[in-house]
Structures are given as structure tokens and as C-alpha cells.
Image 1 (cartoon, rainbow, N blue to C red):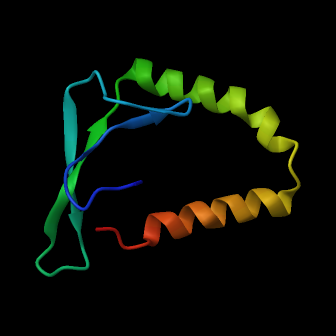
Image 2 (image 1 turned 120 degrees about the vertical axis):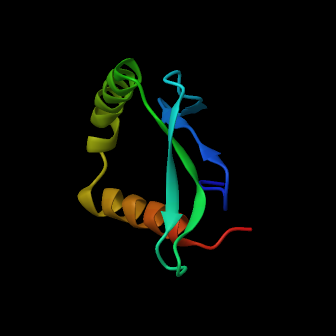
Length: 88
């Protein structure tokens, strides 16, 4: 599951889920539900976590770059569809 209906969402870095070490979170609201209702919260990453995520993305890029552009586009479209699908 990519996103819980409500709850807390942590980091996904280097192919693994991890809780943020910053101890900070931001509430997320669903603007499609008047009045906007809380949909959960997302962790706010520390500078070190952002650095780790950038390093992991740079390491993954060469392998992804070997795929044709149409395959990369299909992967991104699939990811978007998964994010939009209702869950529960």
C-alpha cells in the first residue's frame, strides 16, 4: 500500500521504508472533502535523510537510464495510477 487512508507516512529511501529521525510531521488534508478533512500526516525529513535520498536516487539513475524512454514513461504512469487508486 502506498498511502494509508489516514495515519502517518514515513520515508522510502533506497528501496526501503524508514521512519524519519527528525521527529517532525506535517498534517495532510484532502481538499476534495469540504471542509477539508485531515487525511493523515507525512514525516518531515532531516537534512541527513534528504542527503541519503539524493544519494540513493543518483545511484539508481544509471540503471533506470538504460531503459528506453517509453518504458520509463510507462513506469511513471503506473506509479501515478497506483497513487490515484482508492484504497481501503
